[in-house]
Image 1: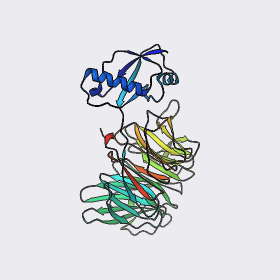
Image 2: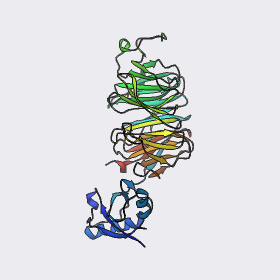
Image 3: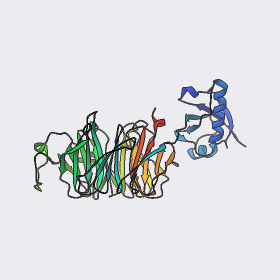
Image 4: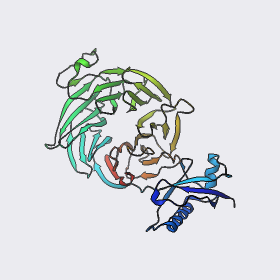
Length: 414
């Protein structure tokens, strides 16, 4: 049996061991490496309990034997192989199940509040402890996307987008627990599918089945003068109706996802098999990425400066939208067995993200482990349509089983 020299290294100093080379069998597995590290830690310091570790070689988790990983990565067995070990994440724990009257098509979390949008045209506000706070009627069709704009102790503002061709801006008086629609954004000619807010949440982009990307202000002041001309002569009641600041054309089918990558740059995904990168100020397309199948969602991480997509070919892909050399697809994550509907990055870890699909599964991934998710977050009994991880302590998902599921993810908070 062949031997190889390895060096065990870690950034978690409480678990550091001497970093001299060790000779091990090439057939060593993660379990055996785990035992080895724990023995070495016990020799050098007091440790009350066994720690479970994950192992990284060339920035990818070891999921096979060492020899298989080395051969797949094309590493030389003549050199000392650096193996980084990190404490293994514990699985998020399932908490509560929020029952709705119809499919849940959108979820958004802000602090301790959960906002959900439903196929019965309603919005709901819940606490993260599963207390139902408010039901909000107003839309005349399915609510497809929602987003929080602002929140303080007494007031909150959020936005909902619907197949009734409107986006509504709402103000919620938290103390009185009353909500008012302060603006109705009109201008799309078919149902809305997606919302994306810029970094300071002063501007919103919406995408629709009419293939248009529209830009709006989210402020309370009415800005009719600053809007596009109104060729369709949309009936304006100057208190409520808001017109878009700009309309951008380019997609050939419905826009399914919107995410901002900097102050003026928007990335959209579409059923037309493309991802487009737009300049919101100049109003044009800067770049286009072609795919093989329809895209259903996209999210951008400011931490890793990369985007992930949900697609009809069952895969999640990681893109570097600014890549000028080689392939823009940096990794592909394969585990779902049906269309992937929703993807969301962790807001505090540049490696972690969620994906939800029509196979009823919500999965938690690490970009360093493309062949298998870290965890399957089971619970949904039908298709998963939406998820949110904007509060690092809780993971929330909604779907066709009429529920929102809550998982605690405190161990992912550094």
